Image (cartoon, rainbow, N blue to C red; front, side, top):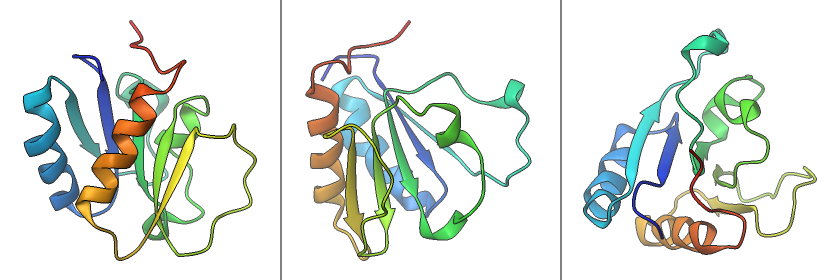
Length: 121
């Protein structure tokens, strides 16, 4: 992992972002949480992150932040079924609910160290 990399938590419990902040920010990463409501204006989107953590079940069918950055690796927290969405291998990790925060942190760490996931300006 490289200092300054950004993790964006979309929807889900505020606790998820709090745990990630407590673990990842001392390592030099930035963690931000947003809630999508389907009406977010493009000019209000945060700066592109290095990883998106998406709580899929809670906003199924809504458009928003993750769709704005299709090339950004993501961790999807949701149902036990893996969605049939074509993505590059290794660019998306799935965690079934209920999940353990240790699993989430390990998935983020794996994605951050993969080639091609270097910091963006």
